[in-house]
Amino acid sequence: MAISSCNNNIDTLNKMSNKEFIAFVSTAKNNKKGIKRIDSIMKLDNNLSIHKRGLIHYAKAGYLFKLQENNSARIEYNKALELYKQEGNKKSIGITYNRLGVVDIVEGKYDDARQRIDKALKIFREENDKDNELVALDSKAHIAFSEKKYKKAKAIVEEILTINIQKKDFSYICSNYNNLGYLSELLNNMDEAEGYYKKALEISNSLPEKNTTAMMNMGGFYYATKNYPKSIKLYLDALKIEAKNENLLGQQEIYEMLVDSLGKYENPFDFMRYQMQQDSINTLIAESKNQEQLKQIEDQYKLIAKEKALNQEIRLNNKNKWIFVVIVGLLLFLGLFLFQRNKNTKLKLNHDNLILEQKVLRSQMNPHFIFNALTSIQKNLLEDDILKSSSSLSKFAKLIRQNFEFISKKHVTLDEDLDMLKNYIETQQLRFDNKFDYEINIQKGLDISYIQIPPMLLQPFVENAIEHGLRPLKEKGDLTITIVEVNEYIQFEIIDNGIGFKQKVKIDNREHATDIFLKRLQLRNLGEEKFFKIAPLENKRGTKVTFLLKL
Image (cartoon, rainbow, N blue to C red; front, side):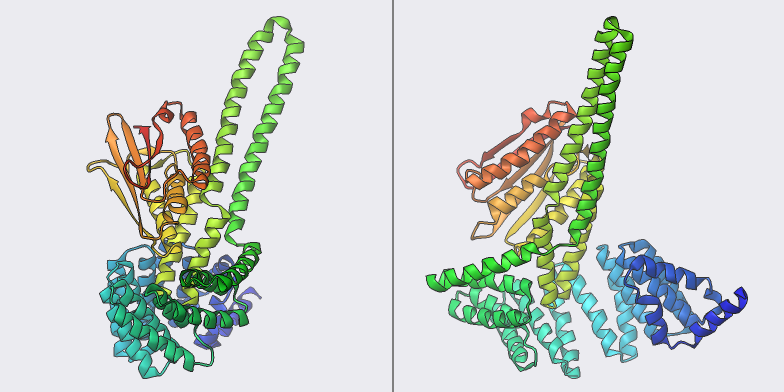
């Protein structure tokens, strides 16, 4: 019966069309369940056709990639590639090369990604497969954009536009013109940017469903060139569409720019009215739940469980203390008291460390930061800005993973900590539309892969510099982090040219971050806390934070 059932399953799978088979193996909503289903099918692997075996490995790679298990995904894609080569299926070979390139892009291996995507592109052009050629060109544009080679990215998007014009795909043509306008702005060619945005808006107006991204880009251009009446009109048109679609995030973004434009245009009545509406939208969004917060809550529960276990141990030790006092008597009381006090001191130290872990976790991954970062990424997705949103989502996912990995460690290498810090800063740059630049200067010859430090010491001060120093600036801000060796210490300096820490809200937040920071240093018992300094910059605006850690 088992053999008969197995053969029936094989026959059923082999009779499926490729489209039906792909739907069967790759449409599970739960990635882990999808992998489990594929693993059960793989037991029949040798009895299936070569192409279906390739599809199985390709589908499993897709699930693994969604789970961020990139190395395992690469292995499965390569297995699929070998089977497609054995079959001689050029289209599937090209698609798999492109997916391998995407895995390399996510890991920042741009040279490897370029080689694989070029192979895919050559196949698609030989096969005259325009749809997949567009996918490969989009991946190449993503690489160029990630490397800040904007001229090259623009040239590739122009190739994409040419194909979409041939296909008369006006929705994508509109998106292409939007991307070309954005790249032209990055290249400081404002006249060219205006032309592209106008073309995007013209096409959007001809579509059944208006493209609010085109309206926002054109409105943003008029705002940047101080033509506030025109920008206000476009924002109001976009607002009507997003309100009709009940898109709260879209309305939030539009209200922010609209209120800003009205403030510049000195229209107090409209300014107050739309500001009140903006507050209402912000309240609605704040009430919505965020999936990423679930992971944070789970980790907090684990920390609370540890705290309860420690408190239980303290209670048991206190109980034992009194039992021994009664049994042993007065002569042993002093010795037992000293022993118990020493043990309770250690438990209190562990307890204090645990509390600090909770505070550090809350300060790094507060819901407000997560929500705003995801909102910025969703904005890019809503604007069909695949290049920017894919890069941003990759960095944000890595930041989330690093934060939860670091919180359970007592020490990390300086190299690891700076990698997390770069991801955090670049996520903040995304949130605030590159409102500031940053640089990290490391003394030449300093081996940051060898130096061990407590995790996430710098991040709270960097957060304060960005949120309360640089964000209120009207002009572009600068953030500089300098790391040098001073005798037997490593010196850290965090300097921003923001509004200065004398502002009341600035002081409150810095004091909160400083409190946690100094407690962490005191628990190291190395006297490092006495070197900590925070002060305004001399003769100019801004703030400097300095501290030393013993090597």
